[in-house]
Amino acid sequence: MTTSISIQALEKTYITPRRTVRAVAGVNLDISPGELFFLLGPSGCGKTTLLRMIAGFIDPTGGRIAFSGRDVTHMPPNKRNTGMVFQSYALWPHMTVAQNVAFGLSVRRVKADERDRRVREALEAVQLADFGARKPNELSGGQQQRVALARALVIRPDVLLLDEPLSNLDAKLRIELRAQIRAICKSTGITSVYVTHDQKEALSMADRIAIMRAGQVEQVGEPRTLYRRPTSAFVAEFLGETNFLSAEVEQSGPEGSSLRTPAGVLRSSHAGAGGARVTLSIRPEALALLDAPAGGALEGRLVETCYLGEIAQHVVELPGGMRVKVAALNPGARSPEPGAQVRLRADPDDVVIVG
Ligand code: ADP
Ligand code: MG
Image (cartoon, rainbow, N blue to C red):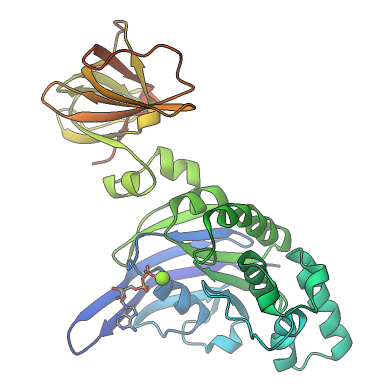
């Protein structure tokens, strides 16, 4: 049976001579057994503090943490059976890969034959079965991080905690390791909490993501839900490029709403309070640029187009001076000239009311 994590009203306040920081300010989360759960947010929003409270390295100033219903809030880290992977791999340089992985088992006084078997299994899990005799400096950065992961897995933790594990690697390796780490977490079935500030990493790897802002959780959901249905401008903008438009709700019903913007009327499949002034988020790739008249569309003037082969990035100025970004995948041979009057259309599902 794998472990669930329940976090209730969790707080950590740092009081320093110069200032008081509420690093974690009332966080509630329920993480399911076997889930690969992400904490995503900008630098300084409290991700590491929250993760280290789950590990037991930081004592909360308030609230409660439970593993499968068992209160661990003030339990010392070595009693919680968590495995940790950090940004810096922190391997012992004088030990072999196998000795590094075996370290936690030796500390736990696991017998030699079982220890060797578990080290072999852990190295197989991270696809480094043949690397046991090497020293860390004979491995690439990505391989070293996989050794660090094997070292965390070998103790068979109830909970695996990863703090920006890919941030020290170059871009290509980072992308390769995303899929590998996800596959390892899912095949072991260990409940994992993964901290990152990289949206793409979270979107591509997570079962669910909590978006954090200033010590609090702003929204929790599956990657597609968060990207497509952000409930705040902060989440919409943090997860990718978007356009914000102000609008007035003309009419709203069960099928959605009709929204008046300075550039025309848009349909949204989301409800809004009639008469309210709202902010809309529409992603560049959700806008289609049309040079022919079309119903239910915004009118504007094409300002510029940047052609990049697989994609063209347009900037369109709406009446009132507001500019929106439009991304067209697989652009055709012809494009309207800058200065041309154009129309923009969006699927009602992609017109999201964020505030
Ligand atoms: P993140 O991992 O999201 O970048 P952290 O959890 O490291 O954020 O930090 C959250 C906030 O708490 C920041 O404002 C940081 O400066 C502050 N903080 C973290 N650790 C300490 C500490 N030991 N003493 C005082 N302030 C701290
Ligand atoms: Mg951090």
